[in-house]
Length: 344
Image 1 (tube, rainbow, N blue to C red):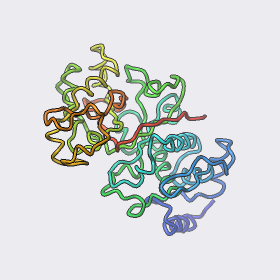
Image 2: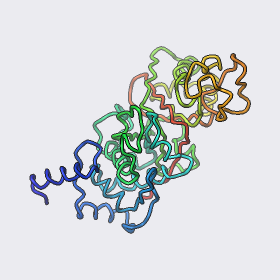
Image 3: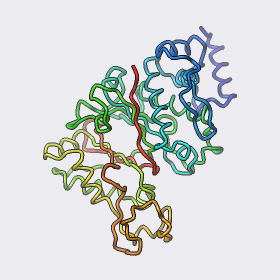
């Protein structure tokens, strides 16, 4: 047991070593790290993967050290490991996300039975402060990406602005209020599985609609808010997330609409004309150079309506949050959503 003076000194040592995100951390003493290693019963030197951009070797022990520093409980550790597994899938393109000047950072989404087991927040203020599981799991993932991957701000991490999610960005699915199948079932997992989904995400964009009483009116306002001219997605495609608040989700589901209906409607209506996309964005007027759009986009037709994403299934839909007629749009960076099963 450290004395208060030893604890303070240990925290300062971590600051001097550059292992913190700017906030104080829990000193990763050997007994604390051992508790995490014992919880998952995996060899400390077992490799999980190389974390870009600098290719640091992430072992189970190194991930445990960062989870301790983030303030996790040992029972949170399998979620952190699964998140790292998901982030290292090639489709996510972690190296580019880590080094981009763009604002996006990995968002960790937890779904399945483990949400209630760990007490993750999926209701009121679910993207905000106040819940240890959300705060420390998200923080542990970011510490691994920085400390092991070497994505230091201003060095390998070239983000022009970043956003507060780069401290911690973790949310859970509100299965209690979800009128459809859980998110992880959309990806082919069993309902009884617990799964981590990761998305290279901007900060939440609030979608405020207290007046619509039917899916069409509600989703038309969402489509207008999602097809942002300077959003990465409409220029480079990739995946986006729509997080429906329970009240909005039930307006849609009670009218007989499925999640796939939502995706199709938004894909058809969240569009901008070539004329406006020429004003700037990623490519400016040189739209003929954009080989990331589908071939059927007519770059020479100023009236052609370009979709937000390539396919309806690139719009991911989940339910979270508490009372109130609000939902959230999460623009992406331009790469893919990935997922991994949590082994508990």
